[in-house]
Image 1 (cartoon, rainbow, N blue to C red):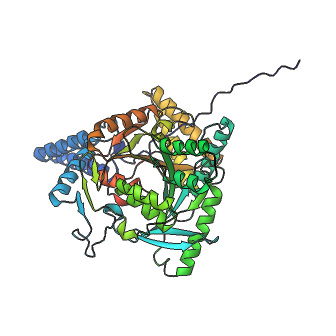
Image 2: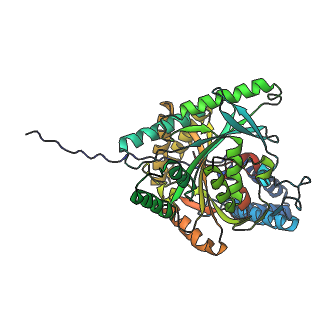
Length: 498
């Protein structure tokens, strides 16, 4: 008799994320460090000349800088960041910048429902790719940003061998490495949204394929399926938005401009094959307008789904996709028929995790009508990545060889050496972040939703989520496939995980 043994292998793990360090005195940042060095110089001159009052003032200011910028909380934010947030919020309230009204009685001269905030001046173009498929381009003239959007149908990991999942993850890593050298690419986002399934599409499909001669029992059974399936069911959609920055004058030649994005669509769809995203198709203007409209006005979802079930489109213009009104609060965001809360990821999963680490966050949550988990990527070119990992490794070695070095310093050095070795073997380096947005139509459910989402974050590899205090409207827009690149929009220094 032949014996067959089942060999169980340990699941593959992933990790080695590192918060990007900031150059300057103890991570103060270049501008703040320059001020600090200047104060040291002033203090030395005052001490040499016995200007005691000047010396005392310089010492006091240096102490304040230490208090404001050296001490950080669990989200890696110092007191200076928090003070700037509070002052910025107070200015928004005084100027009414946290309120928005559009339509005939709103701020738009033409009575349109334009997108507010970070996407206010965006435009939508529609062209065809090399295969004759329509796709849209979001144009942001202020930054010369052009964004193409793809829709995907992820395969999911149900009834899938772990080897296949590992292959998907490896192919996704190869994709991240490939886009690191993608010409003019500023960044891209991956948005996974869960929302209630009304069952309209299923009803249309069943009614179209049901024969009037079918047995009464079969017809009764199918009707029961239609009546019960939508209850508690959720639909999942995935969107990928790639943002490019064009050189000044590069868009004057319309044909050359279109050819560039036609080639990019071919590159992206080809390299995404095998990553587990399933079938990838370009998003048309109608599809994107409907999605953005429903995001700001969840009550419009029924109208959109009914139109799709009938094989029709609402044919919305880009100027009609924004909300009629919104009220951005300190801790939430009220927009048309919905109210949302958004979080930023302040700390990546600690330690090593398996491929299913984000499942708790991606699964539907009770009372949450629409939930978006948006991963934000900013690939680093290979030549810059090599220099970064060498510098990180050198700095980590110096810290690990100090006389007062501890176990954490030694571990960081080993991680830096691992990153350097993997980058030399062809792995890519990428800055990444995450925004989570939960939307409901009942404001009374907000407290329960906040508790549930933050608990899911802790379950997902101990991801640390920080509520987007005073920036709810911006976080909401950045989580949508609109091509909003936050580091290009804010005045504070850049940071992230890589």
